[in-house]
Structure formats: structure tokens, C-alpha cells
Amino acid sequence: DEMLPAAIEVVMEAGQASVSLLQRRLKLGYARAARIVDEMEARGIVGSYEGSKPRQVLITREQYLEMKLSSKEEEFQ
Image (cartoon, rainbow, N blue to C red; front, side, top):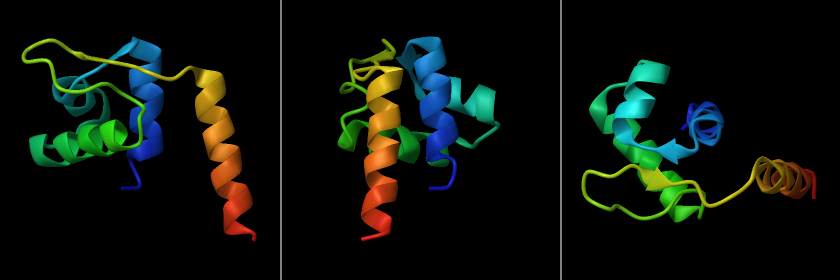
């Protein structure tokens, strides 16, 4: 999803992740926001579902930047 990088920035800034946070900040519908949260969980960026609590952000900004750099390097190989 092309909104994934923006969503990662939002959750890192907020220090927590939730579907409703992405809906509000990025003006997304529920289904798309939920898919993005699921994608972030699959990539190890946010923790797993904990009921009504927001999800924990598992990586630092520096780790995210390293992930972006390594994925760009892979594109050119």
C-alpha cells in the first residue's frame, strides 16, 4: 500500500498504533487502515492485537531508516 510509509511515520510519532489513529490522521477508511496495521505487524513494526489497547511500536526511527535503506539497495541489485 502506498500509504504504508506515511502510516509508519504516524505511528512512530504517536508512539502507538491503532486503526482509528490511521483513519483520523491519514483520512482512511476502516478496511484500508486495518490492512495497513496488519502489514505493519507482519513486518515487525508494531506489536500484536491486544483488545481495545493500542498496539506497541516495536522499532525506533533509526531502525526504520535502516529498513528503508536496505530495501532501496535491494531494488538496485
